Figure 1 (tube, rainbow, N blue to C red):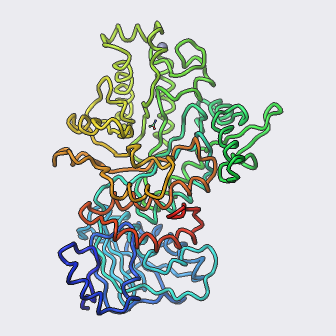
Figure 2: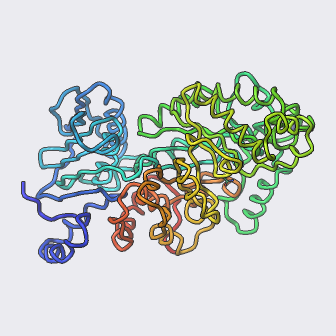
Figure 3: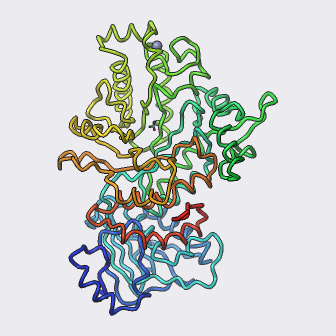
Length: 546
Ligand code: ACM
Ligand code: ZN
């Protein structure tokens, strides 16, 4: 079939030819394809396919059954269709695994004609990304959770070849400062999958709470997952803000699963059982997302030192943990071991940020360790701790990621660095010069808990998240980028969605689409088409202008 017009993805040189073509075409034909992130190549064809109640879904290999089920379940509520699944190549929608498909580990080819839709990929992830594109080709009402009886489920005929620029397209969520239930977390993963994010970094443990069941140390959740909200700084602050501004999204929810009555005090909190974690890991995997768990050590450690004071330098329950004690190291290894067993993804995050090392200066055990190992100072002591833990990670088949402070005092080449301190512009140079891979999440662009104004979205989309002073060799070490959702001022799911959407869509495109295809004037009209889609999903997005 002859292409009717080339999509805007074909580059600036095509613009004048396209302008002419656009003038010859009915606008309705042009308005149908608004995919985010922008595919590498898309060619719209004559005609369309209409999904009917008699449609079928086929999958060519048994490993694609979860993807076929996922697609069927996504289509069911709005269409009301219970599309039968069958193994093979004959159906209205075909998911086809083809190891010879040249789109890479996550790429896919989608062909929609009047006869149906074929999604082809070399691996499961590519199929899932093709499903995300297919959903976006359908009318936005397809995202509704209730029957939409008056919609024609038309898919424009199109041929798309697509693959990501960066493998790491992440979102980090902090359920410590405020708790998010498994169901809320699933809804975030769902939205991430629609925009082809690949990594969910789960900041499970920090000073304000311990959120992960650890069988060997039950006190961590029996005690450490709960607190008196009237004594916790951010709870008090959020509730005050909710009252002052009349914004219910800022009120800490003090009901249901998030509370318990303990010794006469209504406590706020919650944690994830290991069964729930396993369920979430599978849920994410079906959607093409790896979960990266974080147990942040040796700082941000009040949750565990309050439960087990012997972890701290003076047995006083303060921060950080004492790395001079063998018992503290053993605790870390034991916790990590349970984490390794729960999370199949090879990367695990050690944290390592903002460590207040002053307690180590006066701790006889920490000082003895420095002396024994002939270290220069406490920064090198942290570096020794990180390297020791990394060896344990590696011995268990895992790879270590840490916040950029792990560079201080030296780091092994095999550690991956999360560049977060936007004002430390030397971090990416230093990391990549040392051979370390880097995930970009600088405060400057990627802190989704930071306040927004009407320029934030454009600043993110047009900003240089990838530093401009890197050589080709250094660029090879950039794994990708992620948005961070810190929870101090985000007590509810609605506030989280308000802070994250729609700017996460800009980040999704920054990470997926090659830089030379990113154009704000092209992105913004496409984004406008996604406002309705997000709304139908039920996401409390920030209006583009407020
Ligand atoms: C961080 O924001 N402390 C990583
Ligand atoms: Zn110590």
